[in-house]
Image 1 (tube, rainbow, N blue to C red):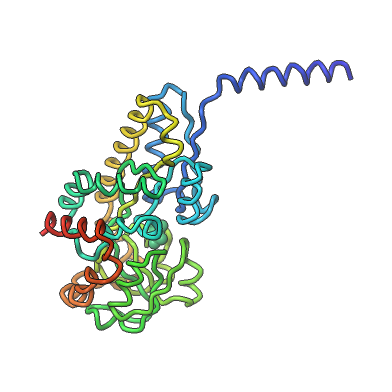
Image 2 (cartoon, rainbow, N blue to C red; image 1 turned 60 degrees about the vertical axis):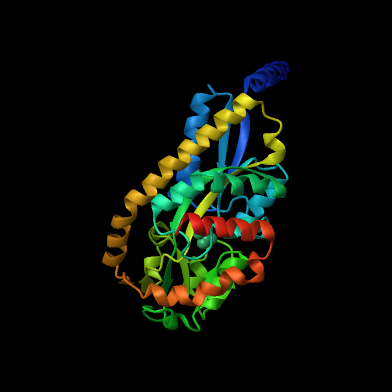
Length: 325
Ligand code: EAX
């Protein structure tokens, strides 16, 4: 018994001394599973920050919905119970309408425009505005250009979309886009495999990596390369937490996240051709050259909707449209 007590004291001392030297833990949330775009950013960031801080920080990645869906992760970041998140642009819609500008359909033609705008002053203005919602916007990584899949019929023109039950992200803009296209949009948080499998929804829209990593080729027959929305992730920190950090650490975290984002964007883009080939090989019927003009025509009026009436949103939308002409 005495021996046991001595051992317990020794152990307790070890734990106390150990914790005095322990790294500062940072919680980082992503909704998707390992191998997904968000996780590639998160893992790269973890590697860079832990190495550069000489072990001062330990990044704990919570993935696969272990701390909730993207909206719930954002709420925890606002409260500083989670410090960082790599979150798809869509769910930010209800926190700050300014993000609608980057989710606007067909606004970006190619990656060169995406990088120029999002890494430049207009992207910085969006990140800065997120402070109004309690987020420190660090930078943009990417989900990618979104494409439509469904299980009902091949889609070549916008008219083919009519009546399809399409799952959309928790975003008023994404809902409005699919309404304008004639679909029956159903907002639903990630993941959605079961709903697709059971036919609760006919289809969904996401970048190519999603169809591969989440095995949508097993349950979705048709894919159309609509590229209707460029979908970034916004890499954010809790503003409350950010203000407690000294400027040197802020700088180190900001740089590590940006490098992780640049690394992931390239990785994502490099893999798209192979993903498309893979999905075809798995039997998906792919419409590679849909009638994009017919899609554009149906969403042309979105900019005049109430969604864009807030002056800061309207102003920025016009500026981004000008920059991507
Ligand atoms: O990254 O909810 C969505 O459609 C997102 O694109 C999803 O998190 C996959």
